[in-house]
Image 1 (cartoon, rainbow, N blue to C red):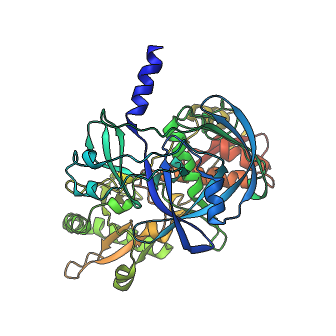
Image 2: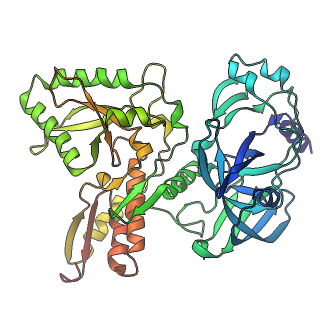
Image 3: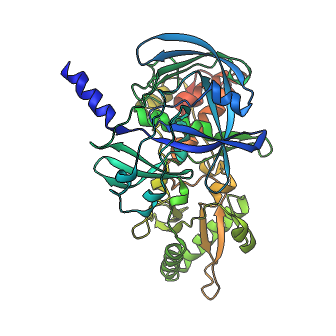
Length: 477
C-alpha cells in the first residue's frame, strides 16, 4: 500500500505536457478555435474529444474502437477518424489525423505558474500561460514527434520546453500540484471503412509496446530478423507514415522523421563554406582526385539527385534552411572509385546541433546474414540482384531539400560558391538505411499479388541493396 501512496504523490507533483493551441477544420481554416492539447510521447495514436470535433464541425471516417480506461474497464465505441489543422505561432498550419473519443482526461484545473516561472533563467518562461480550467480536447501521440515540445532549460526534473506552438513547463517539482489525469490507458482500432479497412493497431499509452515487432499484429514475430525497442517501433511508424509513392516519377518520396523541430538547427553557412575551402585545398594537391570529385557531383546533378538553388528561391523560402558540409573519403583499395563524395549530416557547429541530432534513426531492418547465405546455397541455381543507386532512388520533398543545402563551385576557386540542394535520400543521414529498407519492403509487399515469389525473395533475402538467392530451376531464377 505504501507503493501506491508514493505513486500518487509522485503523479500529483508532475506537470503534464499541456498546451493551449489553435485548431481548425481543414475546410474552415478561418474559423480556428483555441483548445487544450496534451503531448504524449508514450502514445502512437492521437485523439480528439467528440465535443471538440463537433465544435470544429468536422466530418470523419467511421471507425470502431475498443477503449480500456485506467481503471481497467473495456468499452467498444463507434468512433471516427478526423483530419484537423494545428496552427503555430507563425500562422502556419500542419495537418494531423486523430481518433474521436468521449474523454481524454479529467478536467484541467488552472495552475498559478508565477513562482514556478521564476525558477528559470530564460526569458521565454515569462511568456508562458497555464491552460485555463476546462477539458483537454486533444492528445497528440509520438507519431507527430517533430511537433512535440523539446527541452530548452531544466531545473531538476522540471523542464522549460518549446515547440512551434509556443512554450510550456512540464515535469516534476515538490511545489507543483497537478490534478489532471489521463482517462484512456489502451485503445484498439478494431474496424474502419475506407482506406482503414481491415487495419488493426494496438496501442498502450506509455505502458507497453504492442505489437513488439512493429511489422505484424501477433506481437511475437520479428521484422528483418530483429526485435525492436519501444523507441525503434515508434521511429519505424514515423518512417512508414512519411513514405508515399509518386506516381508521376515512379519513385518513393520520403519525409524525414524529425524528433526535434528543424527550426532549432543553428546557422551553418560559415561552417559549410569553411569545410568546402578545406576540401578544395586538399583536392588541389591531386588532380586525379579533384577530377573524380568534380565528376561525381556533376553526375549527381545530371541524374537529378541534386539541383541548383537560385538566390531568388532562397530569399522567398520561409522555412528552415540548413547547409551540410561535404568532403572526400579515400578508398585506395578500390580501382573503380578510389575516392567518394560524402555529405556529413553529423557535423556540428560550435555549441549547436547537427542535422542528424534532429532525426530519428529507425530500427535495423537488415535480414540475418547467416540465413541469407544458407538460402543462397540451398538450391541448385544461385543468383544475385542489386538495387542500383538505392538511396538516390528515393525522392525527398522541398522542405527536406532545404535542410540539405550545400556549397559548390566546380573547383573554380576564384568564383563565389553557388548553393545546391539534395533532392534524394542522403546516405549520410541517420535514418537513410531504415528509410531505404522500408521502401524496398513496401515495394515488395505491393508487388506480392502479381509477383509472389519475387516479393517473398526480396523480403527474406535482401541485405541493403543486394539480393542473393537461389532457385531449383534456371527459368524460375
